[in-house]
Image 1 (cartoon, helix red, strand yellow):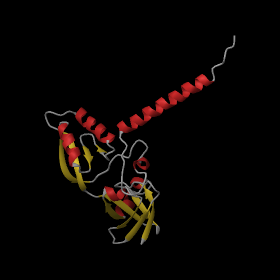
Image 2 (image 1 turned 90 degrees about the vertical axis):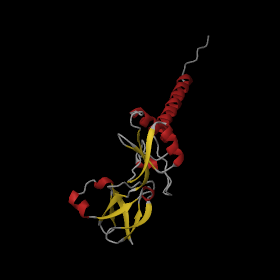
Image 3 (image 1 turned 30 degrees about the vertical axis):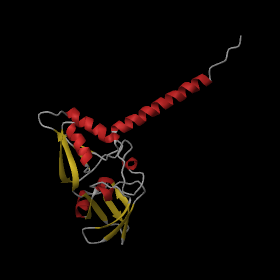
Image 4 (image 1 turned 180 degrees about the vertical axis):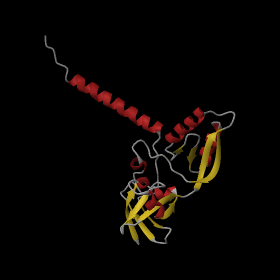
Length: 198
């Protein structure tokens, strides 16, 4: 087994021709959100991927094997719900509102200018349809958002379970943090008030 323990996000620093000539592995999202997994590349080599805990592998990333060879990662097409504004009745705001509600449910979500993608869920599909959105199941690569703090925030463990932090969730967190800091500043201010004795 060939061990890969280094990841170059989107092949940064590599000549394009080297990336194009590299062997490849095609992985779905369930596998790419794990930091440790086995795979077989396009040359038939057995790979053992061991990356720092919390690492998320994206389509376009390049793994470096222990022998120095490169392995290009491709995002595999998989079942997703493709969510768009319903023609004639929906608006761009409906799509933004849907992203907010999905984020509040900690649903991994891929954000695009004109559509959203989530993993199949019939309950969420019905909810989205009630929000004047069109929901169609497709076979496409899935690249959900990595959260406000990057991909390391997306995954706390490598057990295949993801919590994508939405903008709405992050705003709530930031708001709570701001109030907490304000309260601490307020208390700190009062603790240093001079006492006046008459």
